[in-house]
Length: 268
Figure 1 (cartoon, rainbow, N blue to C red):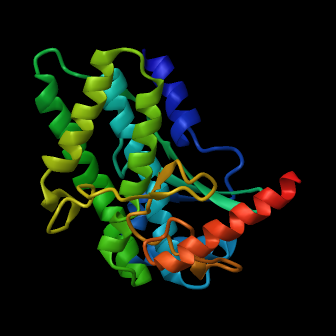
Figure 2: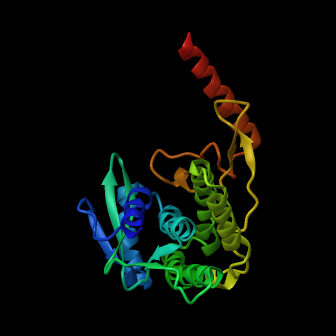
Figure 3: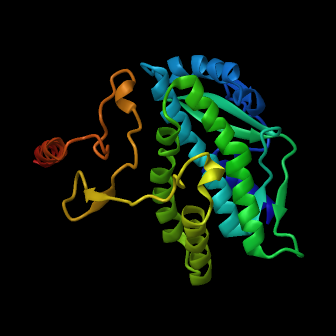
């Protein structure tokens, strides 16, 4: 089980048992919870992602951190076991790739822990999620907020969009109804039962209403609107995404019309 989970953590979530060889810059997470350390990270990441300001860096960082959070959620639901993630073990890596820069994570002293036999799964689940968000994710995002000037709510707000997207993918791959039920139950617990103070917020930032909008290419399909703006428009050559909540509906409709007109022209 541990070997299978470890492989999925690497391939699905970019969470590694050792620093990736292609990393250009690496940072100890313990240093990033201090403003000076996070400013150093921002200074390295900003030119690699071609950000026009530090707030764009913060939004992207929040989005990449959702991969680590998803790794925890997936492990809990699919394996009832989790990688031991703590600031003292965690490193963050910047990896330039095909014109952009991704963020990967690695853990020193790689260790997978299953549900203790003497503990209920529900109690274990709570402690795993609570400790991750309280002791690892929240300190990192608070530090990024202080160093970048982007509000903590905007940074946490990057997570729900990615979570909802990947939860749909995970569910679509499951044939076992019991496992599907566990996946949904665990996600519901994360959104609706995990106390807001663990995130350093007045409300749980993952407990959001998902709005769906007409797909760009197909009027019969819908896609999720982003929970918060990803600030792509504040990168070199960037613009508002089609699914951005800041985009006016008339602008969204114009983009659909333009996209479909070009697609139709290309078919002829």
